[in-house]
Length: 434
Image (cartoon, rainbow, N blue to C red):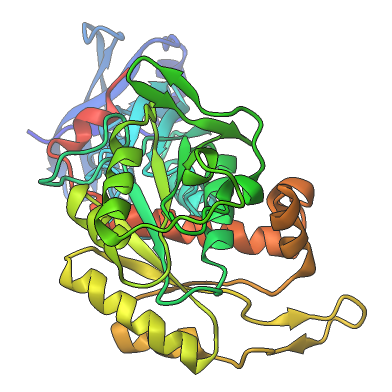
């Protein structure tokens, strides 16, 4: 037997309406046709426990069509968890191209009369499309009959990609930043990426693996030096980022004259002897080229992916091509390409000048079918901040360059999620978690 529900008490005759109480439900539980133009409805009034209170008969106009598969409580639709999950299963995560329910991103679902609240758990706090996800989820639930108020809370839980190699304890994702040659601003990009991720709410570490030229301590500035803790080293702290570098252990004027095996051993020690704590992302600033440090990193720990930094000129693009080829041979995912010093904007007239050429990174991205994740401008403030340990994201967070770093970081985090997120089973279970 199909179950129908009357839209509102006013559908009943006025004399019958007078007996209604707020906690009663009017349900049509059977339909019989006595005459072609006069359908007869068997109507039961039940309380909120389902106990029949009174039975009525009502002859309605033949044009009236009772709404199928809807439940209405005293004139308003009764919204259920299943109703909410059904519509949220039509809302897709734009980067992962799967719906929120299947991905297990809906939690703490509450339905209280006409009010609905739930949490959307993003795969990264740096999600560049969080506003779009929130808006589409809210609009989908507001379209449910009977819903008058929707409260959407956004949180994040960075997931760990499934890898065969042993993870660094507490570290969910390792992002390498590499280049085919020096001088392209790889360390600048590493610092900007780490700061932008941390600003979004992620827990971030930064490993300076450039053994021959460890510049990260100077560029990021140091607020707390590394400390010994038993047989482990506690990383330095700066602007909320945990950081370690060879630069802390040698005099700045002392050259590192080491052969490849010694460099590889030092990289292993920086990975294993440091107590990184609980991190969502560990950004690793690699030395330029395709040498031992990059090989050791790729073979020792599971990398979520590598971000390749290049400048627009063809010479830099040619060298970066070799870096991509190396990481592909090592089965390291290519997150994408960032073009640093892409252009210069005149501070007086705002005219754009392509000092190092134009379009090199874009052509490279198209050739290798990887995304172009950012085009960062050449700006004197970035250079000055690197010299003094006052990064532009700290001293001028509202600048266009800072926004460019944030957009790049959001795209990098999204790529890590896309490459590393597996669809959980029983997605709806997360939606009911309290």
